[in-house]
Length: 143
Figure 1 (cartoon, rainbow, N blue to C red):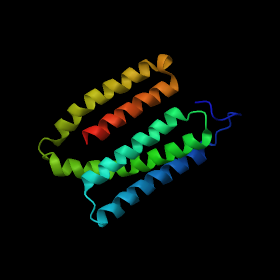
Figure 2 (figure 1 turned 90 degrees about the horizontal axis):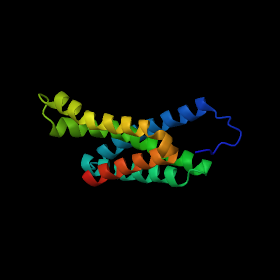
Figure 3 (figure 1 turned 90 degrees about the vertical axis):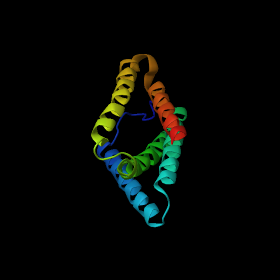
Figure 4 (figure 1 turned 180 degrees about the vertical axis):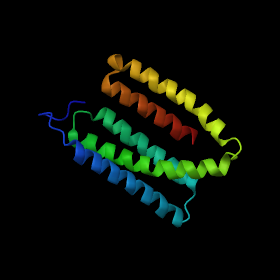
C-alpha cells in the first residue's frame, strides 16, 4: 500500500491513534456488557466489523483516508477482542484444561502467520491483507 506520497509518516501519531482506538474498543465492550448484551453477540458483531474493516483496507489500498479509517475501526475491534475472548474462555473452557487448549489452538495460527510471511514476496501487502480478511471471515462464520 503506497498511500503516503512523500513517505513522511508520523509514526508516533499513528501509534497513539491506534492505542486510543484500542482503548475505545475496550471501553465499548464494557458499556455493552453493562447494557446486558450477550458476549457471544458482541463478539460476533466485533468479528464482522473487523472483517469489513480489513476488507476495506485490502480493496481501498490506494486511498489514505480509507486505509487509516479501516485500521482505526480494526483497532477498535482489537480493543473489544481481548475482554470478549477472555470472558468466553472463562465461560466455556475449564480452568484445568485452558492453557493446554489455548496452546494447541495457537499452533495452526502460528503456522498460518509463518506461511503468509514466507509468501509475502508473492502475495504483496494486499495479498497479506486479503489473507487476514479471509481468516477474519472464517472466524466470523465460526462464531
